[in-house]
Image 1: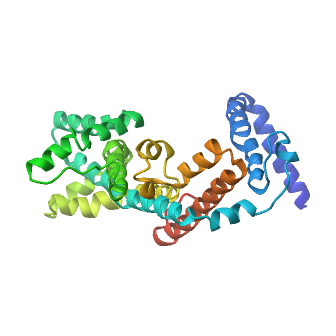
Image 2 (image 1 turned 30 degrees about the horizontal axis):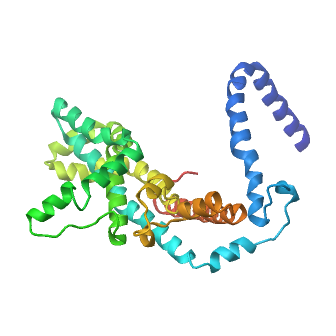
Length: 310
């Protein structure tokens, strides 16, 4: 009986597919794209467990097990890379995550439509700057000789600070500049969630004498909480995935102590040093840790707030 039931369901599904075959054909290119460029290349991860030799290829290279992982864990760079990568990720989460929420709440409270559009345009615009342009601006503004910031410091009697070469300033500059660049763009999704809140709730709160701050705290924030939780999970999942381009452009020998992260180390080892197996092992380690963190945070969010990715 179970076999018959399964067979009838399968026939019904195939009947639906044949009936709507044109719709299914539309997703074939998408499936093919992910198979060819996302899933099939995953076989290359096996070089993390081999001493990869280009002339022998992946299959012909000798298997060495966890040799490259052990080398990474025992290396001088391991704890520095973890500290810097995790430090920047947590700094971004603590500073960069709440600001788009606060910005969206403030923009939502602006009643003058013309001024609201100006604020939105001004805060969205930096998102469209390329990373190269942004880092160039940082070098110009923070230059110890001609930078605008150091000119202000001199006016107040302070000596010039070489911000871009001081390890102590690297994380702050990286995080604050990124927050400034993306806070307007990040607020869009929260503004969309705020637009979905029933206005009758605000009308009822006004009748009860609730102030604007009370309405924000008790209506707006709870209304966008599911969106906040989902984006928080995604951001926690990227704690160890600090971007390569901006760090690499800001990095120099003087601030290497604070700016060397997993992505830049993989670049130096894999691309410049041609240590393909070693760099693949580091990348795989990073991906596995991020995957586990995502699962744990998603589980906690589901238990605490009943909102999760799955």
